[in-house]
Length: 215
Length: 255
Ligand SMILES: Nc1ncnc2c1ncn2[C@@H]1O[C@H](COP(=O)(O)OP(=O)(O)OP(=O)(O)O)[C@@H](O)[C@H]1O
Ligand SMILES: [Mg+2]
Image (cartoon, rainbow over all chains, first blue to last red; front, side, top):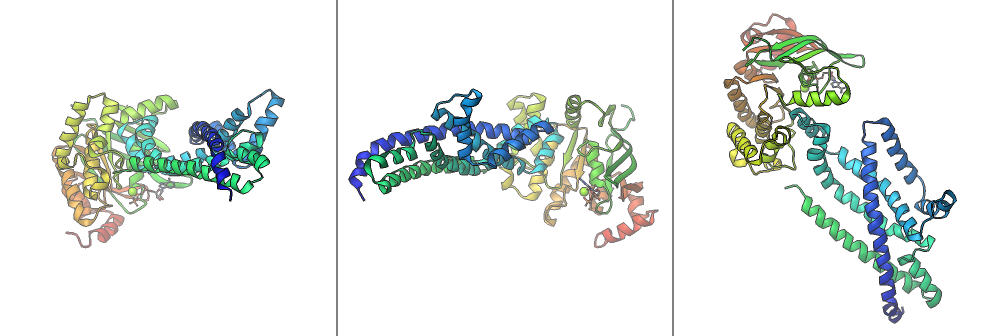
């Protein structure tokens, strides 16, 4: 194993890791928004909204993420959506993980004991007041860990946008193989950096989860 | 003060599909009255109680709280505002307490008054102290529900309902989920409320308690009120065969 090469090339991989982190942060934030909207739609009293929410989830979860990325990036221009690769990557990944987060959030919300909802309503709180002050605070605690799982999948999923030439970790590894002929070292380096990102994210999730734990 | 009932249920009926759970029940409860509802499992006691605050809406019939119809037919938005206002006057205590586990005892009690009555934090805290004093749990004000025993949880739940200063309190088997040794402390709180002339409707399996504190007892079976009257009559000298059968089973070991 050529460790010298790995050390020399490391700064370039660090730069690529930063791109991976940006992709993860931006699409993660977008995913959380899509997830919140999706969960609200799926739990809405309006059948139309429920239908839209359910369709979003089943379409996204029923097709490969890579196809979704391709449709947006390559198919977009055909319908007048011209995006930079990075932008297309963020949007496709965010919209994709949002469907999984929809289910995560919905699951957390419906697993809050219904009796409390009733208790709050009998005190005179409205549906919204009950949701905000009784259901949501508990659901947020319940969703931290499963959302962490979604984020973990998202970070690894950012590798897909190498296919549209976003210069993130996986793409960078592939590119340096062309000049170094050392695929083992290159992919190992990329893998280690993914692991580091995921490890730190995991620490963050654990910290949040501990902080939010019920007394 | 008029003699008009606080709670007036007129020809209440409820079905789930073809299952008739309540069949033409009428019930009037006057201010300060304490009514017990007894009857076998599945007879519709909870359904009737939950119809009073429209938690389980009736199929037909009317529920009145003083001069307000609780289950008024209104467009959704108006109905929501209406029912939320009405429910502030009807306290409810559940078998499984339903405390808010993410809030401490103080916040469990003050959440609704703060949100709905626009009272200040100081006033809310004073209210929590007042109500906790009543149920004898002032020393638990900073505890979380998970740190309380079942009996203590139920007393906090009662305090929470009382903090809204309701005109009537509904109890749905408030002691059924409790270990036997914890039942008495909750019963004591309810007895104390009775002495303060709180209007109460109490669904219970505890015949002894019903006999002690209630002015009137309703025996329900299969969605109808089979028999009702003062506890002396219902428990000692019931007229109906079904009532006698039920009591024979349930008074065993008691008295
Ligand atoms: N959501 C529902 N859907 C269908 N049937 C229901 C529903 N809720 C209650 N029932 C039925 O209505 C009947 C009355 O139920 P209810 O809970 O009022 O009885 P109860 O007298 O309170 O019994 P228990 O003493 O066991 O609490 C039962 O036969 C029950 O199965
Ligand atoms: Mg019941």
